[in-house]
Length: 235
Image 1 (cartoon, rainbow, N blue to C red):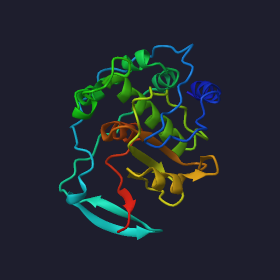
Image 2 (cartoon, helix red, strand yellow):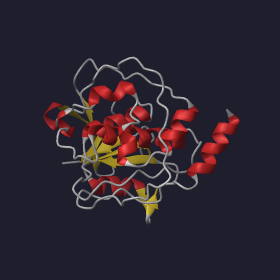
Image 3 (tube, one colour):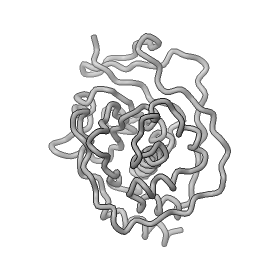
Image 4 (spheres, rainbow, N blue to C red):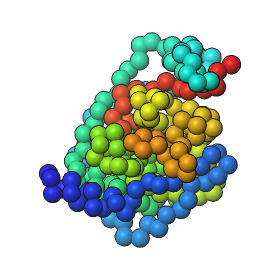
């Protein structure tokens, strides 16, 4: 196991995330995908119940106000917690080494197949298919989880989308101000909480996504059991 972790460390030094997810009007940069390998998928896993994403603002109740922004928490009850799925280090290493849309399309763990027909992904293009986008989000979540564990200093870089796919939601697994995480649809809030100079806050874990369903898959990869609170501007 220790030899596998050393291999992961050596490989990830070439993949550290040093850029900041762009606002909705700016695409994330494309990456060189040469040299990627196709991972061996883990055995078939039990299906996890589909849990709806965050409620609309009309279904939310106000939480505490911190530094001009406000937490909102879902008022719906009961809330089904997500199962935590463990993967072998070999699978995780190979997924980190998979960076093209075509390879990611083949790398999605079977238990996430249920999300491929989500309405927010119905207009995915021929290159970035629903499976590829979900695998990209899951890969980012697995990397963020390792940052939270102290195994990685920074997250691995996510493959870039084409210019037609924009981020609309920003998921924070941890930062100094909010160690339990939050999500926001406002890039400025994300920027104010996470960005220090031209880089992300050290030790934080976060990612921007075009859809909430990709955000949920990221959180599942990060081993969250449900959505964190939403952070929005206080009225």
